[in-house]
Image (cartoon, rainbow, N blue to C red):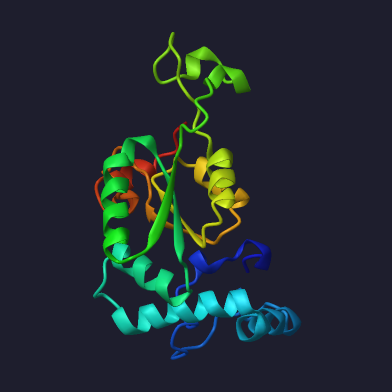
Length: 215
């Protein structure tokens, strides 16, 4: 029998947790969570003002608009339901055109915004110990992506909700860690697949990714 410590939801062939129409597997992660921990989490949804507000708004949007709204529209609906007056945008410099369009849409819906670009601070990569040969364009100034400063700037602006617009893998992690406001994503960067990373899980790319190779 597979060790319970290695069994996770991706190993499950039942997925009974959604509609409870079948039986849970013996090693179900949820079913093997202690009742105490489950009760603590449930109580957060019921009584914690922040958690309950976010969870309720998300459920309301899903239940009301399932399959009818784009991600942009869902963010607007979500912002309104949580009472967000000012949206912070942490954007990749390569997605400024998309960000400017998003800002126009927010303005049309009477939502204030403030943008911080990834290269803010204009600090050369070598100044934080990144060697010259790891620059995309070597032999010239190349500013680092600065997600920590992006977060600090938006924190200073006292944004109510922050949006990620195509931050690099890892940079998004740092931004989320240092952001005071809750964070959601509008664009997930994938330079190869036109910012649609899920395509690698459906297309011919899938077989290639199953090969054990160094990346």
